[in-house]
Image (cartoon, helix red, strand yellow):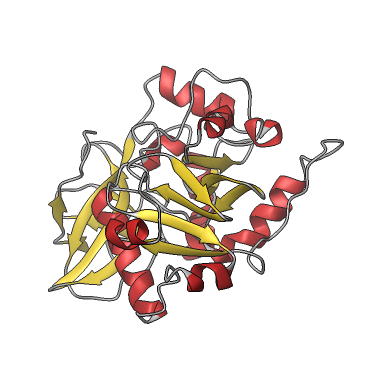
Length: 298
């Protein structure tokens, strides 16, 4: 935990309280490289993140190991992660105290999803999960992933993928509102920029929930809404009659779309994807997106 304490945005000492944490692993420039769900499993601290980010995150963390007595590895071959929406199944498997925090029995760990009551991370060896009927094999993998990501969107819980890696400071993803940042712990990578953003009041973009019309949408895509706000999609999933999405947008349509702390990064993204740095699409198409409520206040 002491190694992670110097690398991620949350206070990892809280893991000792048998609870799970969300935290950002950021670049020295304060840009989020990965979002992790940290669980205090008996085999070591487990970080849950998208498969496509496991290798770059391992490589990024290993640069800071130096003489620390820590081993960082991909646990995907040893442990499986399953998501459960139904507390009754967990209770029937003997997990009766799952209302909050983290609990573990015989190597199977269960953690309530932060800010989303009724959903749980379940982690353990694949054969052990199957023995207890907790592997989720009764549904196709595609359906499980779809339903989990849609639930994340509706809970306003952000995620980072390769397409959005290094695109945002933690507050743009609402991590300060989701208990994903500690402003009282010591230094960690990217802390100076994150703290400056918070204390100088430079948060000009936030994560919003949207209903998008039918169309071709992808994570990382830039868009401009009819109200003038612009930004990038961080998550998008098909739902009834269209798509539900999370997007980092300007808080005020009157702003130019970028602030001094983000200009350099957005300029580099422009070269990569051919779009302007403020989130404006090449043809300035205005999207008729409807704002949807978040379960927390911005």
